Image (spheres, rainbow, N blue to C red):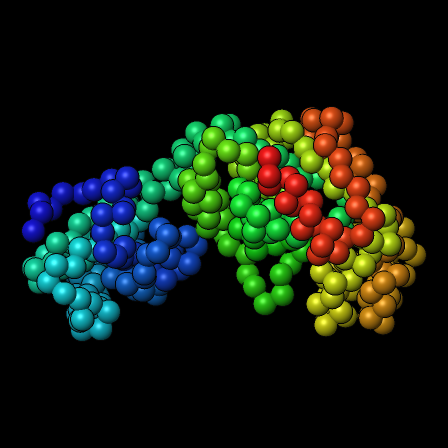
Length: 348
């Protein structure tokens, strides 16, 4: 068994398992990739211990909290860890590498496992994520895929990946399509910290010597925001603009967003968020179409009256090299046309 001394974030790959000893709520906000949650205090117990610490002092909090920790550790030893072999090597962390992970490591090592503690806990991991995003983003050789709403940019990215090109799919990482109607049905977005952890993982996996295709995005994707270094790199990078006539874009949108017709009332509520940007009569008409399930006139109106003008304003101001973009105009946004373009772009 190796010596018991806290290890750094750079050694994560040396362990058989990563154990998050924090409460379920802390784990849900964000956690190390691949970690499993085995809390030494659950959410309510953590609240109780914190209240005792503030009102009755450290000794009382530790005495009562210690009994809770012991009970939870006993449970984990009898369940989660009961089948682990003698040579199992877990890495344990808590919020800042303190008593919660320390107590778990102590018991694990008493059993005979070579358990280690993450130095600085989740806080050190979080600093590492931010530092690496900040360091790596300026060096990414991005190709920003631009184009008005409905031009199949996201589909082109997926096809580029299938053709062997490097892709940074920000909307997939954010679990959101990036517009007021971009919520993915049945799926929750990650927290801001969770999104940044996903983004860090994706960037770390890239070969910085090769180009990376990424879809043009505003700072906010649903409820999460792009870190400034990534956004600034995108805005200064070469652009590939995908263009198609309105009928082709409408056909694509009716396929890609068909699920919006499953809940007409929810769709109408989302359209209501655009009040203040358009005349009341316009919003009323759009909501009426939504409630009636008439997606074709609704999507065409949204595209022509809302999204296209917004694209004209924001893209030309946000992406400095859009005027020099490599432009590709497709008469139709069918699979064959998009696949051919993806193959052409990836071949370079």
